[in-house]
Amino acid sequence: RNEMDFDKAIDIAFGACSDAQLRRRAEEYLEQCQSAPAIWMHLMNLLRQGLHTQRPEVAFWCCKTLSSVIPTKPLGPPETSEVTELLFGWMQKVLADGSIGTLVPYIRSMFAQVVGVLYQKLWPESWPSFWPTLLQLCKASPGPATFDMFLRLAQAVD
Image (cartoon, rainbow, N blue to C red; front, side, top):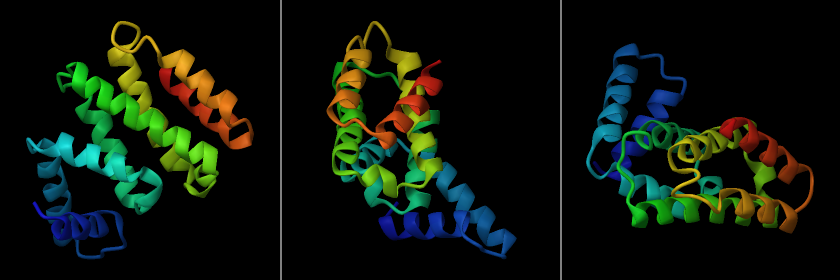
């Protein structure tokens, strides 16, 4: 699956495509991507690049897919460490530089949903640092955007 196909499928599936058959093919392609063995690596690469650097449709698809993959994927210590560091690392960056404010609200909500799904799976046994890390991130970058993100995360983990 090359990036061109992926980007085109995202554009068709989430765009204003009036061709129902083409839209269905794009949706089927994205469903195939979700079940591909390499999906975890692809999603981690998208996270490494930063959700804020992705088009909203790609960021949405990434979060939606992570929310459905995380509950069924066995996560050993390396995967757990990678995903938690990527998620909180991204959050630290966008809170510190203010770019969280450029994200549409539904992407912030989808990000919180991913964290919530991961929290349900890992906390407290495999992610005991969740609350201390979250509170430290909030303390390091106080402000309305941080408070908004904290509330989204609190709701997602409830």
